[in-house]
Image (cartoon, rainbow, N blue to C red):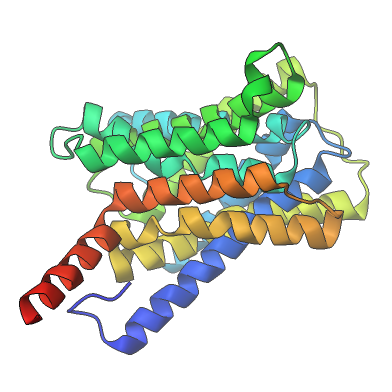
Length: 313
């Protein structure tokens, strides 16, 4: 994460924040797995966004910020809440009814590749380069390794769950384009608060219609998992997200995509006894390679080192 304008201490601080963000986002898969024992997936999404709103509104107040009242802002916030919260959270939680937390986090790691392709197709200032296309192909190849050839042989709820998580990754990618086009010019914390309020407004009628009124006669462990999702994996995560964005930039922030699965896998193994098989490990390695190709910086650095050594000889 080193740049010419950052001292080593700031680089170390940024990387530490990045690890913390990966941990709290990796923890979201564990929290969801625990909450799903008593709470259906759409209701978990509602809990996650509703509980996070007061924490972010408090942060707004402490920062001396206020939510805009314009129709354009709230239209953008509703769309962002749909694409970045309501749809992906619900798909991931639904998918986790069939697949393990670690596998869900690995499949969610395709977000960076989807984001690069979607931005290349929809944003004129982010062209679709050869690296991005190659990275996307590698990412999808990693997914194919994970799902296996039997995925084409017939219907399997586990395969459908994996496709749901991939759909969530695509929704995250579309959200990045939506946010850039419609929510530019506002402080990030304002955008996050508006987005979560929008997601809560959208999810409430859906939950009431599909799953009924939320139950509150839940165990302490389930309440703890829901609180962890909302306060750690959402409110705190967005605070870390924006701190890293300000310190290290969007390109470095993308590194969190690779760091989330190891945390999710470790937590799943420690708390739930989950184990990731060889196919999932190889698939994650291929997805990680796709990320490296998409990002391009490591390849450019290796190329420069090779050219320098060649010139020196």
